[in-house]
Amino acid sequence: MSMSGCLNYSRAVVFRAIAIFILFSLFPIVLAAQEDEAESGDDIPVQLLTGTIGMLVHPDYPPDQARLVYQPLVDYLNDVAGLDIELVVERNYHRYWLESRRNNVPDLILEDAHITAWRMREFGYQPLITTLEPMTYSLLSNAALADDQLQDFVGRRISTLPSPSLGYLALARWFPNPLQQPQMLSTASSWLDAVEMVFSAEVDAAVAPANLAARYPNLYPVATSAAVPGLTLSASSAVPDDIRRRLIEALTVLHDNPDHHAALFELDIDRFVEADPADYAGLEEWLSTIFRM
Image (cartoon, rainbow, N blue to C red; front, top):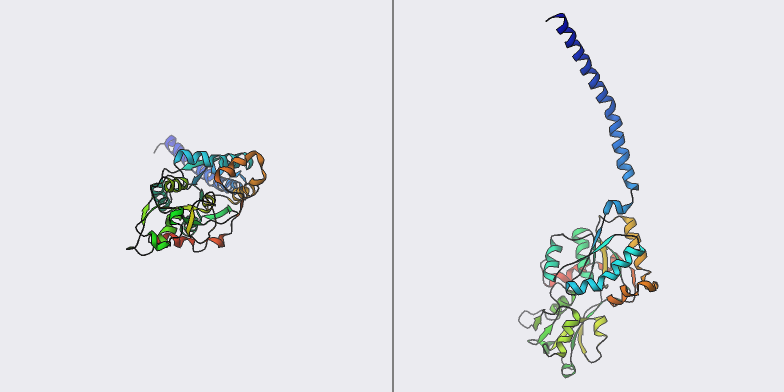
């Protein structure tokens, strides 16, 4: 090798050594910077971490009507709690339950207590708020059948919303014998629609929640389910604690806010209270009436 070749080779070796030295000198600095960035991530405003938060509501109404009923509540939370919540509506109970079993759902869900309990067990959701009054469902008949007993409705037409609505499951519990069943007609588009089918003589009786049953003194309760927590908002583990607290604080004072009266009026409830997870223990067993859990 010539003298110049040796010199070039030596320079290359030196430059390579310097490059390696610089690389390994900078590595701890870069690593430390990444660790500092990760630690500082805890201080980033939660909304930047989450972006828009979806809130799914149970399909007790057709989609267009559901948006009218639940949007005032979403507007209130976005206004008062400073959040960016987007209403999510499924078109029917079949799709709602299918996506629920896949856990292909948003991080906030407003629904009946038995499905909240199931999500708590299966996917780690936690209840945040519920209604002040517990919920019951009643089997309502007209005056002509007011003195009849449950067994008298075997073979008769009863309107309800589809499974796994709590009303449908209550009806299934009242008639556990598969050979002695009423005709369960789950074609109603809402609980109000189910009750109106009694007056149009399309059915002999209807299942209805307590708040709706109270509006009809001319219908008579044949049976009433056990009381469970009412409409419940739950959050997945992805919702940070401070967002949960803001939701609880905002919703438990909603009844004192006259500017957002429509949020409670549309839901036909008086007020929300903070939920106690212990109240949901075992409620998922309601689903075992229909499904193998």
